[in-house]
Structures are given as structure tokens and as C-alpha cells.
Image (cartoon, rainbow, N blue to C red; front, side, top):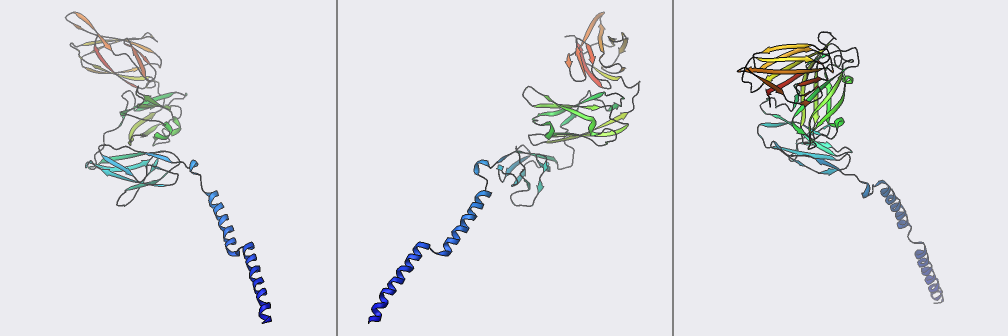
Length: 355
């Protein structure tokens, strides 16, 4: 009995001591887990980008009478995969290529999507090029300006030639560097380094009606090349066409040549008399014309001015003919006086009865 009485206090003391140690020190395993979880949480927090710094880039596209576009996302972060569905609604058209800015989208076989691309670190405009199902060539959307020439003359001086191209429909161009490329297929004939100073021709509404660029005639060589012009527009058209250029060595007979095409409109009587006076060298030329179209080739110096006196005689009365005033990169006309800014060009003029 005495032993039992003695053991009871000891047993109670042991229990109290154990409770004290348990409450004071706490369990060892949860404490270890807590430290580990705390470190992991810290790492996770450091690796995550705050919401305020996440950049979402927009994806811009437009539908038209040939197709309807739908996307898996309308905005995305860098590196995200964007899936595109392009549904053709014009049975005469099919998709040729799809670009996200200058990135060519890849085709996929999927029940909901048929193209995809990975998001770059910038806004993206989808540019969708279609072609006719029957293989016919679509109407050109870049036109060679009628004042251009297909022949260039190599120069031993740092001379330039200006070429101009017109869009069939006005386009929205925001970046020459990103949206326009001009390439020569024969680098020995016309290297890309000879092509420079690309400029846009703006309309009053801010759209672009065409482009001009210069070719350094000192850097070109004999031969033939094809000029490829690609215009990646913001309304889903990839414009492309080919233009051939011939390059010849400098020739005194050809170096100052221009061609003038006269189109006589609303003229009642023939012949038509054309007198040309060169203000620079006082040369005086006379022509008698019997058709409503006439092509005139002349050798003149850049910067000279020609006065055109055009008339016909009806019932003994002299009727003066008129050329519309105009100014462009190649020449200017004011009151039938033409000032030439560039040689080796074609000038097409409409001639009317005096207004």
C-alpha cells in the first residue's frame, strides 16, 4: 500500500512534466514541415510575376467577303500559343498563307482550328492571303506607275532614279520597316544596297495610295533583274508583285532620253500641230500629228523646261489645246510648261480642248 501511495505522486509528476515539455517545445515533425513550406512559398513568390507587370498583347484581324476568322484568345502573353480558325465563305477562294505580323502561321489538323502561332512580345496583326481555287492569278494590288521606266542606265556619278508604285486600293501603313520590303532577285545587277529612301504617298484621310523608292545608279550593273515588292498591310492583305528592270551601261545617246505619250481627247480636227521650245538650250521643234495618240522620244538634260504649244485649225480658226497642271516626283506641268526632274522616264499626258 505504501508503494502504491509512493508511485502515484511519481506518476502524476511524470505526466505533468511530459505535458509541460509537449506544450513548450511542440511536436518536432510539424515544425520541420512548417519551415519547409515557408521556404517553398518564398521561392514560389519570388518566381511569380506580379499581376501589374504581366503584359498582354493584342491580336488584330478583320473579316471580309471571303472568310471569317475566330481565335482561341484575343490577347496573350509572350510565348503563348494562339489557335486560329479561318472559315472560307467564298467557294471561289482558298487560303494561301497566313501571317502573324511577319511570322508565318503553321497549319494544324484540328476540329476547331486550322492554324496557330506563338505570341511575340508585340501586338499582332493577322494577314491572310487568299488565292483563286481555279488557279487564276488574282488582280494585282500594286501597280507599276505609268511614268516609270523598265530600263535603267548605269552612271559613273552618284545619280539616282525614282520608281513609283500605286496601290489598287488605299491601304493603312504604319511602319515602312515592318510592312514594306523591296528586293532585287539579281544582286549583281541591282543589289539591295542600291535600293533606298522608301517613301509613302499619303491621302488626306491618312491612308497610303502608293510608295516611291530610289535606286543608286552608281551601284548597278549590266543585266536584268526582277523587283519584288511585298506590302504587309494592316487589313489582312499581303500584296506582292514582280516588275522587271533592265540595266545598261551609260550611253550618251540614251542617258538623257525621255518618252512623252500624248493622248488627244475631244479633239475635233486633225492634223494637230505641236511646237516645243526648250528653255535651257533654245532648241525649237515642230511636229504634225494625225492620230489621237502620239509617242515622242527626246534627249534632254535633267532640270530643263519645255514649253508645249499645241493647237489645231478648224474653219480657219486656231484652237489651242491644254495639258492639265500637275506635279509629281518625275516632272511638273504649269500652263503647258513641263519641267523634267528625272531622265529615262515615260510621261503620259492627256491633251484637251482649251478650258
